[in-house]
Image 1: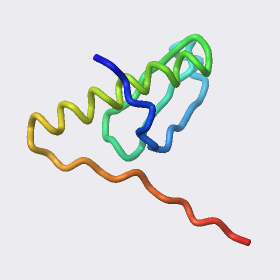
Image 2 (image 1 turned 180 degrees about the horizontal axis):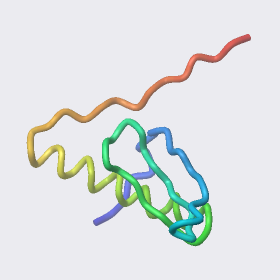
Image 3 (image 1 turned 90 degrees about the vertical axis):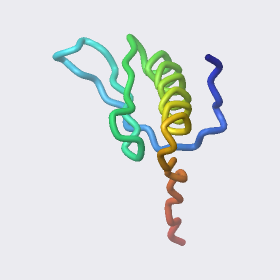
Image 4 (image 1 turned 90 degrees about the horizontal axis):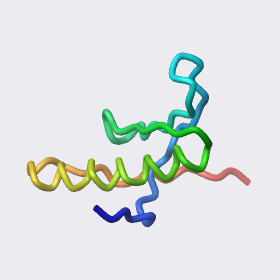
Amino acid sequence: MTTNSDHKYEIVLYWSNEDHAFIAEVPQLPGCAADGQSYSEAVENVQVAIAEWIETAKELGRPIPQPRRHLKFA
C-alpha cells in the first residue's frame, strides 16, 4: 500500500509511558492511530493508517470525513 501525504487530517501526537512509544491519533477517523519510537516514525506510520482507513471506508461504502479547517484569528 502506498501512502498519500496529501491527506491533511489533524494528528494528535503524544508519548505513552505504558507503550514506551509515541502515539499518533487521527481524531476525525475513529480508531485510526499508530505508534513509533520517534515523532517522525509515528507520523510516518499514521500516514499509512490514514490511507488504509480511507481505503477500507471506500470498500465498505462508508463516508470519509473531509479534513477540518481551523479558524485563524487576527
